[in-house]
Length: 158
Ligand code: RTP
Ligand code: MG
Image 1 (cartoon, protein in one colour):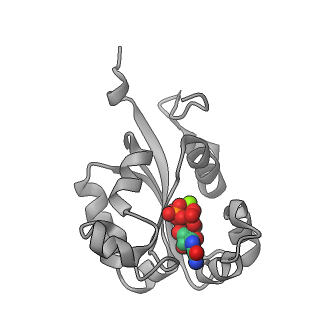
Image 2 (tube, rainbow, N blue to C red; image 1 turned 180 degrees about the horizontal axis):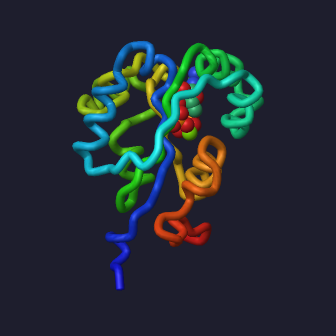
């Protein structure tokens, strides 16, 4: 019987257009592997505004929404499915706070401190809950990526 800390989990990571364009992909992947994640799947893509709006639907109506959509559609990005125990919270911890300019002070070793600029251009994305991870992995990779060896990687009741 597995103990809870040994149960693997998956999360969705994105290297956003500023990260790809700034040639940070290799450095970010090195940090991912060094932190003990497995990169289960990856895909480079360019969002159009319709798909970007769907991905960030929770922010529609906010003051920064249009700016966020033009940022996220400004060039190619890299989506990855990351796996390890507690992947969702571990990846959020590794990327650091949303505002990269603050991350440089409070979390200088975080990925957003390394590669980001400010509150918007923060170079990476990470799912914020099991529900988000499920939705976001489905969004980019389909339901084949939601299971490992026939076992579901998420519980909605976690
Ligand atoms: P993400 O979803 O991209 O992983 O980032 P997050 O959870 O840390 O931040 P969230 O609140 O979900 O916001 C999504 C993305 O919108 C941009 N943003 N701009 N100008 C602003 O006030 C503002 N606030 C957020 C950032 O690119 C943020 O990652
Ligand atoms: Mg978010």
